[in-house]
Structure formats: structure tokens, C-alpha cells
Image (tube, rainbow over all chains, first blue to last red; front, side):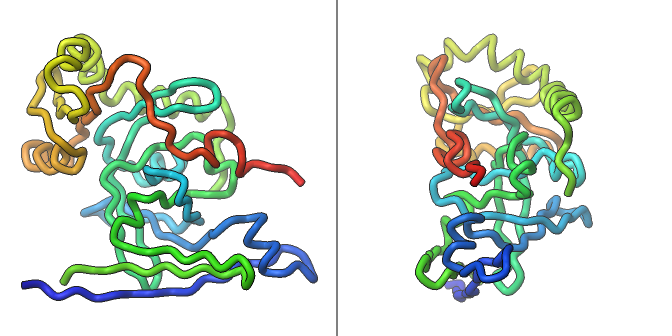
Length: 150
Length: 100
């Protein structure tokens, strides 16, 4: 029987203005964190900004990152947007978070929108399937925990 | 990471669409019949041939990865026309994008 381990890391919101509280910074910018996106089985990797979005079922990767890493396309998904239904490409990508390890994403949506928000990756509920996410709005902090099978 | 301008993004999305154009054409030619026999399953297509229907995307990917390692694949859920899922209410409906 394999062993399992738990990794945990606390993040705090980065303030943008003098005197701005971490509480307000987290409200404004959301739970952002540094993420390395990588093409599996290659040395193609990119450092980018990720954000946890528990409202999203699928993780997403910016098309700019898709192009930079030459990610493997593995399908398409129809999504509902404000402008109506739209078909988006999906990709196989690995995400690495320092101290937390690798998260395998088998069907990340290729997003034409998130780079304009300063994001390379959106971590949806699929990224959290082996983890937990605790949002502490009062302190402007949040914690990610992941279970790893050994 | 610099965001692409609108023109570059349109070109990039079209390039990505064309990567699996043969597979998409095959999917669209058969999706109505599959909606009767394999509703809500995931189909794996390579070139103009289906390689099975699966209960999850991950199962379809495992098979596709074994048959066609490192190659592009076309895996898509068999759904009724017009059936699409909301991916993120915040992102797609503009809640996150508020200028203050």
C-alpha cells in the first residue's frame, strides 16, 4: 500500500499601494501565487502568476503560455460565456508550486482572456481535487494544502 | 508575460483550431448520432476515426496517450447541441474585472 504525504503553504496578498492593508489587497487582486507551468516530458517551462478560482470547474492556461510552451492539445470544450457559447481548446499541462509540488492538469482550458488580467494560469477545482484551500480574508492570507500519493 | 493584442490572439486561436480540424469535422459529422448512443460520454478521435467512448476525460486521455504518445488528441464530451458548461462565473461574467 502506498504512503501519502501532506504539503502546506501559506500565502499573503501583496500590497500595491503604501498603507494598503493585506485585507484590501486580497479583495482587489484575489488569491494570486507564483506558478511554474510546464509541458510534460520536456524542459519547456514558464514562470507565471496563477490565481485560485474555486468558482471554476476547469483550470485555465493563458494562450500566451500555450504558445510559449507549445503545449499538447488534447481536445476541445464548449463553454458558456457572457457573449454566448464558445468552443475553447484544452491542453495537458503540469503546474508546479514551490514547496507544494506538481499538479497534473489533463484538460486545462486555453484562455484568450486571462493574460489581460496579469494571469498565466487559473487554478480551478480540478487543480484542487487532491487539496484544500483556506481563505482568510481578515488577515489577507490564504493556505493551500495538497495530499500526495507516494 | 505580455498579453497578445487582439489581432494576434485571433490568429493564435485559429492556429489552434486548425491543429485538430480533421478531428473536429469528424466529430461534428457524427455528434448527433452519438448523442443518442453515447450521451455525456467523452469520445477520443484521431484523424477521421473514433477510438472509443469513456466516462471521464482522464480515461479517454489515458487511452489516447497510450495509442498516440505525445501527439495532439481530440477528446470532447458528447453533448446536445447548445449544451455548454459555465466555466467560471467570476471570470466569464466579468465579476473579477472591475476597474475601481
